[in-house]
Length: 518
Image: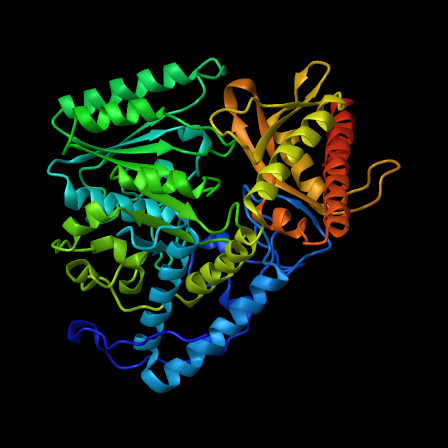
């Protein structure tokens, strides 16, 4: 692997920092350069999601909607990438070598997404939440008025969005390791920002229809613009349950009605969105938030903002200061052509973030080698198998699927005869699945599911079962018999996960507090 190394601009040229961070164990590098969610603890070297910076092939894993442990193939890619960076850094210096490495990662990502040559630019970030801050920074620079962020599907996006929409710190530490006050204003981002959340749930706990979501967003945009504010509209392309809002027709209407006052950014952080769809949204001038750590199972966290060429042409001329965003982002994260912005950010290589994206790119490469018709068929088969399994499980219900033609993430409600289990009990069951706690007459196998998503008005939370790019590519072989065996094994694991989940829900329903599984 080789990357072209060009000289840095004079304003960016500084002496080489120590190479010592690159000699740390890969497991350590993969969990650096982010906030506290990346931290791993003992026993097991796992983060809060039950994932590790090393392969865990023994686990049944349907948790891609939350996070995944790195695969063997991706770890090999990470090791090779680190080695190439070391060789280049020794000959050309860390700044030049790392700048070339990030540029190559950006180009490869655009190539995998079939966006090469489209003018699309990539802004890298430690997570999708950090990428939202970068989006607000650009919106403030591009739009003339104070910015109101409208968040569609706010109850099915990351918990940090409530803070980032208003330019506030979403954790007690930044990616650069700065100690900050959670909820405090980020200098240069939050002084005149406000956020409006529009959830899928009504106050009574029932779900808004697609038309209701559309109407609510139109009203909110009109009201904000009427107050002489500009709007950053964060549309939901695929929520934690795979839902979408608003409709394409409403996005088009809002963009036309308030041209120059509204910037649309699409939350596609799950990256369960077809490549043609991404290209379509970028062609309309929308920014797109993505991660490599959800559907594509790169190690948590790896975020990015895709910026359409039409906006990039304007951003090239910007000279906005980064202020407090410097705690989350470095010059290397921004496209090289955006010199006016880059020069305000520190030259701080984020090796962990880059390596996590390298891992995600390996998963993308392997996934896209699977023929498209095979990928589509597996998604259809997975949905049928899951629906059939849940139909036979007395204590499970599936949430409706909304907005995705080939859904790959499904919300599951756990219930007893008296109704849905409490959110606390659902959380207990989620952890029991991870720990492989005993269930009568069932083998002990750890099983990871997507984190519970709170449904407060219903007094419960939904777990998520997801089909990932890794599971799909692991099911495929050019040998038809081998493919059949692999598919059978995956669907056996799915059946086991559903049955075990149902058994735990049954046990929890036998006692008022679910004490049997705590």
